[in-house]
Image (cartoon, rainbow, N blue to C red; front, side):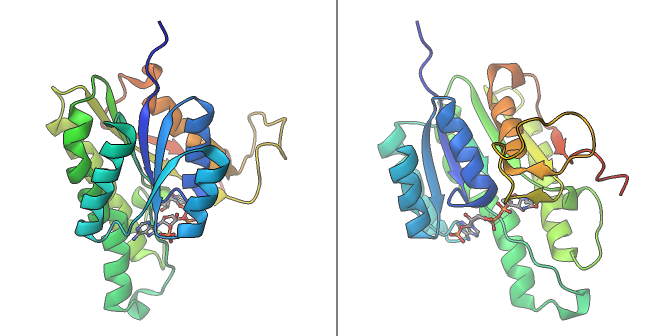
Length: 236
Ligand SMILES: NC(=O)c1ccc[n+]([C@@H]2O[C@H](COP(=O)([O-])OP(=O)(O)OC[C@H]3O[C@@H](n4cnc5c(N)ncnc54)[C@H](OP(=O)(O)O)[C@@H]3O)[C@@H](O)[C@H]2O)c1
């Protein structure tokens, strides 16, 4: 008998890496619910991939409650949560405004709390659930002019490891994927012959790591950071 398709929620799915994650799950036969704030990007996704969508600002807890209701109505439950939405701001430390600091921490960290806490009861009803948080090399290494970014992503890595420990006896894994700089313009189709050697990371490389963590092969990986740094990045 064929297993039921995975039911997947992806935040920040309208463009960039989130869209690539959406495409990869759809190709793998999953039922996907996509969310972000930009309506026309979600509408495009709905038409092209047949996913269900909710326009929501995940920094707003009321909108996150509505998102959970949509997920229940559209998917009837949830097996995989991909916390991908994020912002990125490069600023000398003294030039950050308090609003920019708040926006970075709110989106990259507090919104992950909002979404995960709201959706966890649904995930715990699944017999095999996965949470994958898209963190960053920024959370592992300190970079100049990226203090808020590095703080938020380091926080997300801590969140991931602590939640994995807390849920250790439940049917769920919690992991992070940590990409280095991603070339979002280059497509897999344009680079068919990739082999080991100096490589840029493509959106699809991040999506494949997420898919692996959500697959049966990834079941024993828990509380981990999967680095998708490309080859050559750390040497440069
Ligand atoms: N690009 C890189 O080189 C790189 C490297 C390492 C890690 N990452 C991480 O990968 C993830 C995706 O990055 P990306 O480069 O693909 O970003 P992106 O192209 O800027 O897309 C970000 C997505 O997040 C959504 N989003 C932002 N704030 C939101 C909010 N308050 N509520 C709901 N949705 C929100 C955006 O949609 P709306 O604006 O329409 O809401 C968009 O769909 C991020 O977490 C990022 O930190 C990226």
